[in-house]
Amino acid sequence: MNGKAAKKRGRPVSGWIILDKPKGLFSTEAVSRVKWLYNAEKAGHAGTLDPLASGLLPIALGEATKTVPYVMDGVKSYQFTVVWGAERTTNDLEGEVIKVSHQRPTTEDIKALLPEYIGLILQTPPQYSAIRINGLHAYTLARSGKRVAIPPREVKINALDLIRITSEGHAVFEIECGKGTYIRSLARDMGYALGCYGYVADLRRFGVFPFTADDFITFAELEEACPSRSDFSLLDAFLLETSVALKSLPHYAIVDKKMADRICSGNPVFLHGRQQEKLREADRIYVRHKGRILAIGYISKGAFQPTRVF
Image 1 (tube, helix red, strand yellow):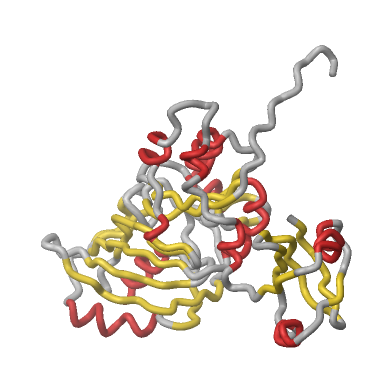
Image 2 (image 1 turned 90 degrees about the vertical axis):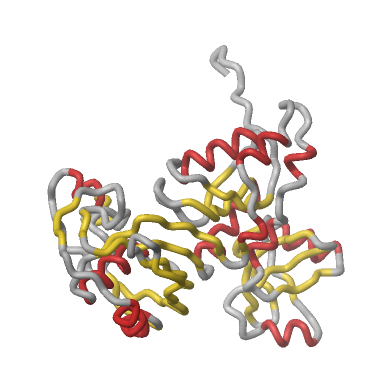
């Protein structure tokens, strides 16, 4: 080992922590902090929250990182506040004001506009976003003073409601939307449509299917449960099972241990009975044995073909 001590890999702990991320913290910083607290081998997150945003950040540890794509595809729920009368470079509080207007929309104007943003819509991501343009992030180009043409893309908004108007005249909304929706773009576009400009002043995520605010854990709770680096039992009690992330997928229960062992080795197995017939049309399913998830895969000609083994 060239005289160097082997690097410690951490614990092989697996599961989900649904962090209530505070403002002022990058998502990657939050993941690193949770990984350190758990002394975990692997960690990742399912859906970035900007530093100015707070709320639900699903953090996967260990084997749960294999289920991250299924959570990222889940429906998201947010509450956000829009300030009218100005446009900012970043479409939120972080950027500089570049346009102003003395026009202010009425409550009736706002409510009349909302149906235009429900369903499948075309949305152009903000200039300050992680979209890649010729291999570079759009925000990298924006920070260097370059304005680039970002093509619009289709996103889905299931619901968009005006909750209240604050004493300052700001509008508070709740939204349920699909993957890739930019709330900052929505505020920008509504501001243009209302003839007054607008930007996001506050953003809080409270749902990423299948997780909700009921699953929230704070850093204070995690740190209180970690009195030493030798006993992780209290911390581990906060973990949600890896399979929870696969709630949107149908599953098949394997009874035979030999079949389970074959799947764990990456081999296909034939499934039988009515349960298999119901799963035949599914794009993806997962199989489990004695409550433990074994693999994600698909059914072809009556056989389960594993594509991701746990």
